[in-house]
Image 1 (spheres, rainbow, N blue to C red):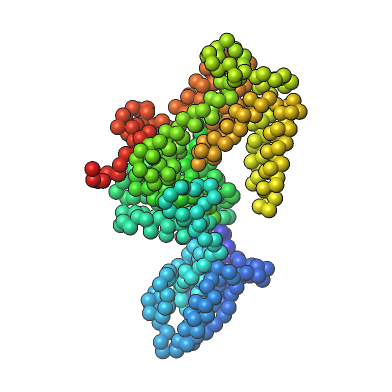
Image 2 (tube, rainbow, N blue to C red):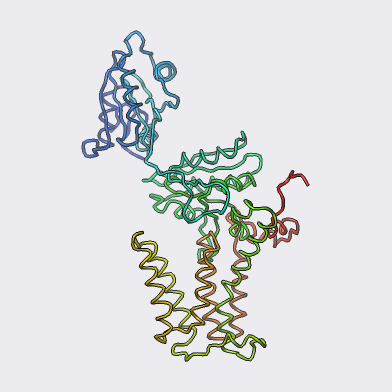
Length: 482
């Protein structure tokens, strides 16, 4: 059924009517205002004409709405413009005002919290963006901390996040394009990039992928978007994106020509394209002098390698004690081994994740006593009971703590999965399994591709010595005086 251009078929293009009763009838049915208590509408008089406002309670600024309604009701009939375009220019004392006659767009804006004004005789809706969202403060994120530097962080409101980036990059070349994804959620997605530095071919590719997303909702925000953008090689655990909750890190990557993707309701940014070297980098590398920054970066690389090799190498040496160098015989397991070492390692790998999950769900008031209890039970008591050997507990404790040297959860779990594979292959096939597992990890890293299709290990392959040195060494900023 058509009502002056209004079609009930949601997939078609619909134009609003200039008749206010017909407009209200369509909107009231579509929005089901009688059942949705937070969808508010009110009929008023503006300059002698009937008008109606629609908005979502909780998204509009009350004081501002009160002042605007008072202004509208004070308009006299001889001051009333003849059309919506003139009305938006002369009679609305607000900055962000838009005109729209497409019903799908109008409903999208209303559901997003925009204040919608319909006036009898006007064939366009006046959209007044007076939104305010419930939001927490831009405090430093719990996970992505830095010893020095900025102490602000992204929040769940996308407008605040774009403002934090704009505050750091005051350039006319900074672009922030808005997209939407999800048939039901209509989630806001913003692409942030420098127009004069970004790879435009890759940028167009990202835009096309976002526009082609056919899902009902981005339920898990950025993770849902990441899975829609990168659909191949899901079995490779190494991260295809870098996630950060720090505006300074996101701004630095934008200035380097990368694309930062912000998703509404997510307090972090996706950085793409991302190589293995990008994932390992952290803000502290640049907030300290070059020598200190280089040390921190190299330490992180070394600890990541040790995290992967520590337990499989120990297991291999326990299988071949004759390979232990002179003076290092103290690493041998001296106590009775009741459970095979491989099973001790695998049980502890699972137990560490169990403790991590328990810590996430533990109330703050109980975290300290429960952590002490867990340390006693899984530490001294588990060794005394004979379940685990003290050497195994020591090396697994090092691995568990060292995982937190990486800011990326995805990279930490990728190393963990590869370490478990190495443990299993070493236990079954000995030294050949150990070598095969290392080759498997190298293959997984080298064969992985960024979302742009380029090498995941650039500048190592293809080799670029100048760029490679910058990945390992922290140089002074360009332009700094000697």
